[in-house]
Length: 142
Length: 142
DNA sequence: TCAACAGTTTGGAATCGTTCCAAACTAAAA
DNA sequence: TTTTAGTTTGGAACGATTCCAAACTGTTGA
Image (cartoon, rainbow over all chains, first blue to last red; front, side, top):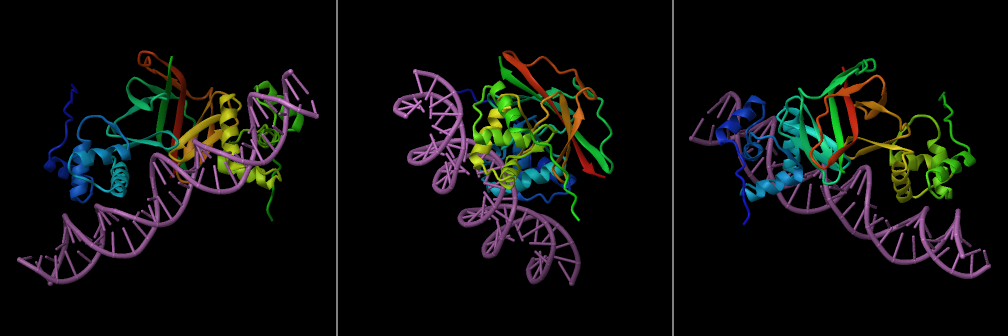
């Protein structure tokens, strides 16, 4: 039999709270998605979230999923992780951390930010400021 | 008036040489592309190389560009740099180095490998081996 | 309370970069 | 040469994402 692990979702009020705090109008769809994204640290794709919303009985148009994901990212509720062309993940962990990326199956695994360290980043070109330093440790089945 | 800087391309024999060394049959198209990629350190997209080949009077089908770019990458003649979904660059610099990525205009700038250093990469999950550590320093116009 | 408006959602079409395909071609081996 | 295995081609197909204009809905303030 299939073991189904319970996913910790947010309560509606809590979700509304977060949206307001981020300056986003708490629409039905945004609240639903905020609830689904919940509290746990997750790496999810637009397609995946779309499917989940459907299963959870609160279908949201794919276009809205994309809009929302980008708005959430803008509002620092999510962080976008780019690992390959055509493979974009959204990470509910917005804290300081990096990732292992398994090229074989496209899996992402967190690396705690206090474990890894990047030293020697040169001064950015004139008129530019560092926004973020992304580290992707590409691993392969050995 | 427009100043046109001369791009250093490879001689045909030199290109053939490289291809043979990499175990690739030196076809007309591969030689042309190897010549265009030349010696200088460049960051180029498939689309861009396709255009360049056309301008240089040796048009190559886009499908061939993709094939070739991947074969060259496989053969370590190029390195693929992923910075955003749907934006894949090929780097003629296959040595140890990392990149600045300007989110505003999609530009890549090299960071010498001996300047930057990543410490504290945890042991990869069981059965996995580190293939490469990619660092992308995202910068924005300030 | 409700009208009005600005912001949001929607499905479907459009676009983008990339890959696939089967037929035509070509470098290298025999 | 001929043969053959590897390569190239244009166009169709693809998956992910964005665009669009019409319908809808939080929010504001009368």
